[in-house]
Length: 301
Ligand SMILES: Nc1ncnc2c1ncn2[C@@H]1O[C@H](COP(=O)(O)OP(=O)(O)OP(=O)(O)O)[C@@H](O)[C@H]1O
Ligand SMILES: [Mg+2]
View 1 (cartoon, rainbow, N blue to C red):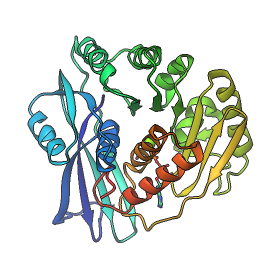
View 2: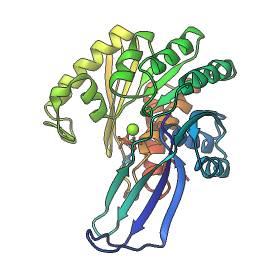
View 3: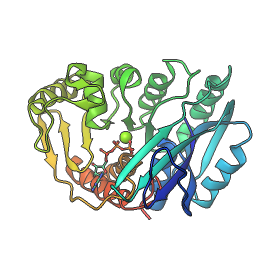
View 4: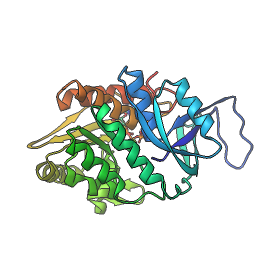
């Protein structure tokens, strides 16, 4: 519900305060939902991406989705599609993200989106809701989608954080899958200072027991499963009564943007085939690693 055109630019050396030129650049339709849908499509899983799109960049966005085979249903929002930029600097292997905040969607967008959602839902098996919403949507939209899906018997997977995640829990989503930083920011803000976690190491550090305790309580209260990715470090996962860890085999990353979305797609595809949570995490790790090694955002080939 927050689409973007993602420019990815790769430089042999990116030097601030100078003119930097590159012939390695691309533009892809992106945003969390598109990324997940693209990887599901690449995995051969039929899926439909539902979003809002507005204004003059819409044809470009639709063209990129079509080229990737991403099936899409959109409602008019009159909100210009934003650009986001990934700057890859080979000199120090850094990846810099520049994110434009979206223009608010105009009145009526939420009602159109919800109507499309209700119409489409019976034709699909699982619902995945990922990422943030553009401004202009209300706080009830995501929890309503979760409630409606669960009432009609659909498994729900959420890659959300903050208010949308907290307010959705009472409708018992099946799996929640933020990254660890987002999870801590939502349920244990005392563990977050600025843009990093306190006392967090590859092994987990001092925060691991606290996170484990929060997972245990949430799993019990909401009967959900929780998967927490940690970039190139092992994935933590929890089910009612258990907490596990799955090692990540590091790849030399080229562009890790969208690795979490590739992970979500792999996890969801496995769970739809009734894999255990550990096996689904393993497939998520596989897809996340493939994404990290590619220039293209939210893709596994
Ligand atoms: N350097 C890496 N080597 C191998 N796998 C990686 C690497 N970076 C990420 N991954 C894989 O991708 C998964 C998700 O990564 P991460 O935790 O960074 O997601 P995220 O922060 O949600 O990303 P995004 O929201 O941009 O998609 C990891 O669990 C791991 O499996
Ligand atoms: Mg993510």
